[in-house]
Amino acid sequence: MSLEQITEGMRTRVGASAGLKKSVKFDFGDNGVVRIDDTATPAVVDNQNVPTDCTVKVSMADFMDMASGKQNPQMAFMMGKLKVDGDMSVALQLGSLLG
Image 1 (cartoon, one colour):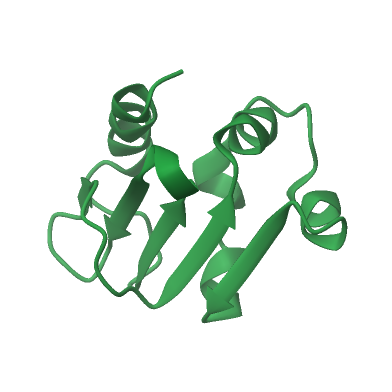
Image 2 (tube, rainbow, N blue to C red):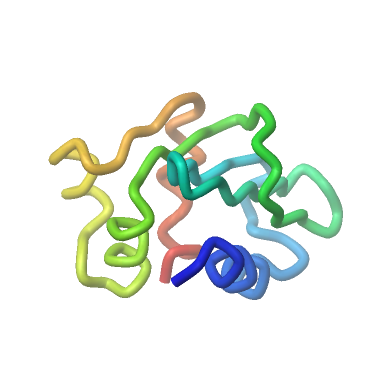
């Protein structure tokens, strides 16, 4: 799955609001980022690499496994496959967006 497909999928899931009231970005390293800015109305989902309240660093493959239910996000975090910088409370609310 491409970055554009992931971005569009997140845009569909987020809709007008993600219910976070904060900003978060998924950092896929060399593959780019997907940013959700839920401080705006309606929420913005794009690929801008700007500072956010929370950054989730994960490979695109591991992200896809979590989104499809093949991998548990908490286990990925414990195994070091997922790293969180910033506001951890935002990361804990992401389950509903991932599927």
